[in-house]
Amino acid sequence: MNDSLAAVRDHVRDRMAAVHMTVTAEEITTRGTRRRTHRRVAGVAAACAVGAAVAGIAALGPASQPGVHVHLAAWSVDSNPDGTVTLTVREITHTDELRAALAQAGVPAIVTPGESCLNPENQSRLFHSAVLGSDALTIRPSAIPHGDKLLISQPTGPDGKVIGYGWGMVRAGEPLHCTDMSHITITPKN
Image 1 (cartoon, rainbow, N blue to C red):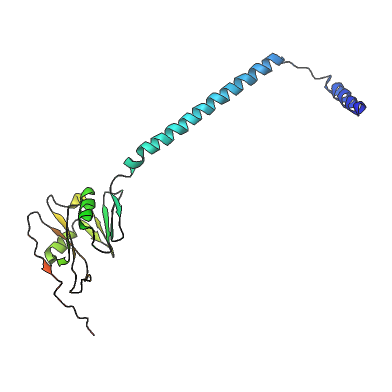
Image 2 (cartoon, one colour):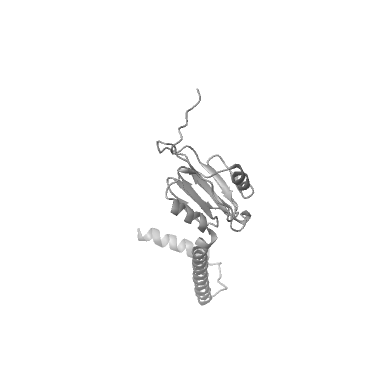
């Protein structure tokens, strides 16, 4: 087996005899060291840049999504990037929390569970600062006149079941005229 290795070595040496190195081994080693150092520096710089980007995103995270995002089973309040606030109501419960969430989102509100405080005037006034969807209300707080408040009514019948929901806008200082609906019996038409 040694003879075959020797034959390969001799063959390679004969073929390489015409090849002459113009660069010394010391220059090759120096270039390799410089390249490795350059790669390390570039790698460290890249890692620092990635770390700074991640830290910047983390620092901007909450600020880039300002506003209110409160979700309960009964209702939700969400601030939107365009400055509007979406209120979705399935049931009016936790009225203090609902008022607080809306206030934090820039929407002053009056919530009247169990009563109907709506009239055509405060209902039509609402459409100057909000858009009513099938189960949600999109409000533009900047369009609400100073001192006015969003009115959310949820009348209930004598059995305590919700009859419906109502939305309106109450002018500053305007008194509410509410009706307790719990004693009224609603009979469906045949």
